[in-house]
Amino acid sequence: MKYGYGWLLKFILAAILVGVGIYMVFADEVVYLITGIAIVLFSIFRVIPLMKTLNKEVLRTINLIEIIFDTLIGAAMIYIVLSERDLTEGIWSGVYRFSLAFFFYARGLVYFNSVVFFKEKTEIPKFWVHIVALSIGAIIAFQPDFDYNTVGIFLLLISLVGASYLGYDGFGGYKKYRTYQKELNQEKEKNKPKEIDPETPQPTIVDEKKEDKRPYVN
Image (cartoon, rainbow, N blue to C red; front, side, top):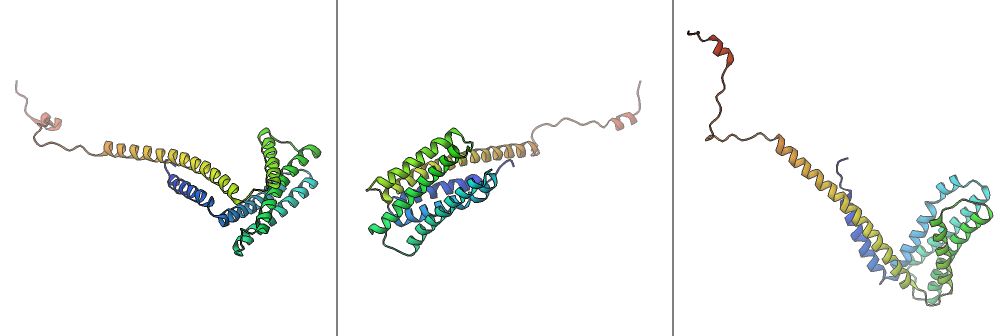
C-alpha cells in the first residue's frame, strides 16, 4: 500500500500510554491490575510457541509448571483489585511484593536451569536479560520498602519508551502518507486540461485535404 492510517492509531496509543503511565504513579489499584494482566498475558501467549519449539520433554514440563504458577500469580493480583481489597494493608502489599519477586526469580532460574543442565542454546542479550531478572527478583524480595510506587515509576518509564517508539513510528507513517498526498496532487495537476486564454492569438490550423482541392494556378 502506498499509504495507510496506522500512524493515527499509533499517535492515539502513544498518548494513552503516557496518560496511563502518569496515572499509575498515583494509583495503586491500577498498578496491581496492570501488573497482574501483564503477567497473565506474558504467560498465556508463551504456551503454544514454547511447547512446540522445546526439544526435550523435561524442558516442556518445567516451563509449563512455571507458566501455570505465573498465571495463578497474575490472576491473584487481578482478583485482589477486583474484590476491592484494601491494598494499603500489610498482607496484600506483602503478597504483591513476594509474588512479583517469585515471578522474576523463577523466570531466571528456569532459564539458567535449561541452559546449564539441559544444554539449551541461547543468545547473549537473552542471557543478560535473565541476569537482570534474577537481580530484580532478589532486590524485590529483600527490599523492605518496596511497594507499588516503585513499580508505578518503572511502568511509567516503560510507557514513555513505548510512547516514544509509537510516536516515532507513527511520524514515519504520517510522512509517507503526506508524500503520497503530494504525489497525488501533482498527478492531478498534470492531467488537468489547460485553460485557453481567449485574448491569446491561436495558431491557424490548415486542413491539408482542403488545400489539395484548390485549383493550381501557374
